[in-house]
Amino acid sequence: MKKKANKHLTSFASHLDEQYGKRGTKKREKYEEEFESFKLGVLIQEMREKKHLTQEQLADKCGTTKSYISRIENNASDIRLSTLMRIIHDGLGAHLKLSLTI
Image (tube, rainbow, N blue to C red; front, side, top):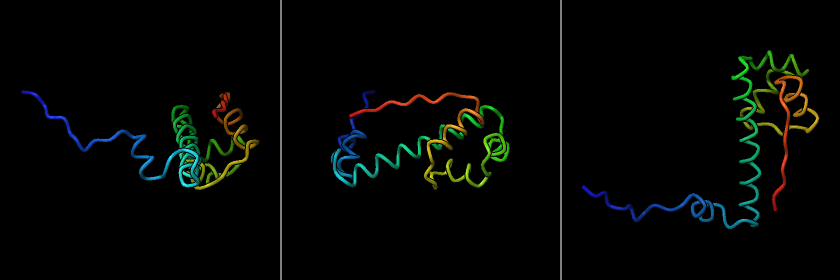
């Protein structure tokens, strides 16, 4: 039995364009920045859990507080680059790789 194609499906990119505007618009850029921050929090949480660390243990290793780690993981706090580097290097024993795109 053949499945019928759903004519109401759109791509995620089309959805973003519709909801937040095209790339380069203020609303879309705000969304993109917040999404990158969200991804960073998720990456830190996943690595922390992979290393079997609690938020408190990670905070102790990198000289910050459990509540700050929680806020980062839940996308509720901006993070300074120096603090991010301490969390990644001292707390998680990892290395950060950055890239820029235009």
